[in-house]
Length: 380
Image (cartoon, rainbow, N blue to C red; front, side):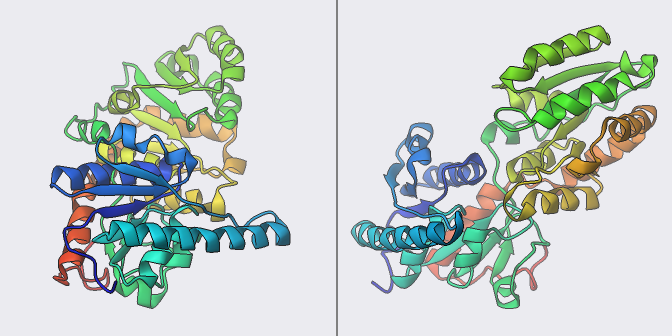
């Protein structure tokens, strides 16, 4: 099985979390729109993928993690080996044209089995730091698709096989690419959006109300807040804002994030890969507070890359205090041109065609054109 039929299905392998599944979903939509068959191999968390992308067959694969001490690592190794055996059998039946891994441990057995079978393989890295699963696979993949031109933990040989495609975002996000940024006027309000993941971030509920209360009354009265908050924090945060006369809409989950991002004049958020990619595609300035317990601290690398591009400001969680946030907000509200410059930089950073670029890379690899040069020989 050295080569699969060029028109066989394209298999995507991804962990079940949103950071891995969003780009996989975007690529699946792009490939199916081009008339290609797509299948997904994932864990139980990704089983609803087929409902979101019609026509995609979803298969569950065994995978192990490598945490929990020696016993946990031994158990994870056994699960991984069993997963490779399962994946190998499934891939033989599917006879895919290529396999693309999006990270997360559930992607490891499938991509590893594909490499052993001699299938064309691509791994996509969403973060500015090569993740653990992708580090296991990078030496075997024929191509590495990167979201950031400067991606940490790439070996020289891997860099020569890497192409910067960007991180695909949801179509609903890309649809707001053309909506211009509204520069705040000093006599008017400013709309601030606070996102902390699907359940909000406790640190935002603790720090932001204190920071806003420290603003001069005239500045505080300009704030129009939309904040994602943990359910258990909703009432206390709502009461606090009401006491300080701050206009705020709070919810544990916003189902219209694309629209809120488009309206926002400043965003305060974690620095997950999808969040950073969406900020770039829509072009909105942000204060990013990396989640300190993320694997390999990859969110700090994402935030640093975003800030280095001039698109926003990175604040480590230990430095994310009410006093420091209030000081930065005061500076930005008093100098809206800084927000406008950051919005323009974020927009320049965005890659709305990431799904298309990734699809081009995959199809070129299948066709054996060899047109995709590594990032050392191709501009980002």
